[in-house]
Length: 55
Image (cartoon, rainbow, N blue to C red):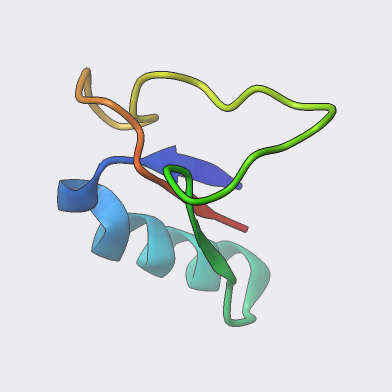
């Protein structure tokens, strides 16, 4: 699972496929609320705000 900014979406997709050998789902964090989990505010790969969840 990766929480990433728009700039790092493609890299996160590639890393997910390499690791799990399956296509991930992508969730826009601005459009989705989670009842039991707060997504990180920063991208996993830089200091920009996280915008997408690749899972």
